[in-house]
Structure formats: C-alpha cells, structure tokens
Image (cartoon, rainbow, N blue to C red):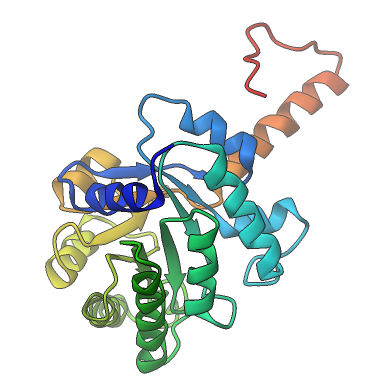
Length: 258
C-alpha cells in the first residue's frame, strides 16, 4: 500500500483530471473490497447514512463519532485505493474529526454545511484544512452545501445563487471541491460549474441528474452515489429472500466475494 501522502496526492489529482471521477459509495470492509477489486475503481467514498444504518442509527450525526471513524478506518486499511469519508458536519468539531480521520488513513472527506450561516460554515472548512495541513497531508476536502437539500421552500434561482456563493467561499477557505447534492438537470449544472468553477463541482448521481458521460462534458469533477448503493444491495437481498420463501432456489453463478 502506498503512503498516506501518496494516496492523498492521487485523490487530489483525480479531482482535477478532465476525466470524471466516479466514486461508488461503500459502508463496510466487505463492500469496500468488492468495489475496490473492480478495474474501474480509482478511489472509494464512504456513505455516512449507510454506515449509520449498518449499526442501527439514523442519519444526521446520530452515530457516535468514534464508531464512524473506526469503520472508515477499517475501510481505508482494507483497500489500496484512496478513500474519502463522508463525515457529515464534523460531529461538533470539524478540525478534530478530520485530524482523527487522517490518523485512520482517510485522505479526503465530505463536510456538509447544513445550511448554517455562511461564516460558521466557512470556519468549519478552514478548521478542516488547517488540521490536514498540520498533519502534512494534501487532503481532498469536498465541502458540501445543502442549498438544495435544505432549501426546498426557496426558488431554484435562490438555491443556485446560494450554492455558488457558498461554493466560492469554501474554495477560498481551502476546500478542494464543492459538493452540491440535489436533483437538477443540465441547465443548473451549467450554472453551478460556471459560478463555482470547472472541475470544482461534485454531484450525486440520482435519477434525473445527467449521466456521467454528460457530467464530464459539462465540467463536473466527481460524482458519487450516497446511500443508494446500499439500498440496491439490500433490495437484492430482499428480492432473493422473497423468492426463496416462495419456493425458489439460489441462482447459479453466485460470486464468492466474501
């Protein structure tokens, strides 16, 4: 396995490469290894929602930070590709949480603003960047704005403007990229890229969002998939169990991935 600085440097490079970085979200060691073994995997991202659900917690920083950091560390140590962790809003101390995540082998992170006042959100980004700098790691901070997720009662124009303002401020504070989750089409993607910067915007791939090939053409840096990957896996498990209860048998060709 390469050093943490080498993995961090590679993750930063992948965010600036003209080729769209696709990160499939994982939630434990076995899911991480299954995805990491694929030829197309260049990096991994954890999903906080999925990890919380694994341990029986609701999303939204309900899981103890020690438990979250233990799991993301196990994932980072189990694979040879860079791992970015979803660390929600930093669990009350963004800088300290980033410092501890680096100690677990994590080389990038999502940090959400929860639509807090801009000065508070920027301060959390600055604290995170400072913590990584103090550790000597070129950390890939993917600063997330919830302008769309928490701004459902606002107009589209207001959400776009807010996301751009926040994104620019996060970049000025040292973030590598700006994560703008939401379901919107090409016109909004164009506005976000124009306002925040080419190869600076990262999105979540949900139904209704342009396909990866088009996102690359539009200048998006990265796309991830959040808790949907775990939901697909759980759906497949439910479908199999239902079929077995109805008299079915295990299908041929099961891959021994664990």
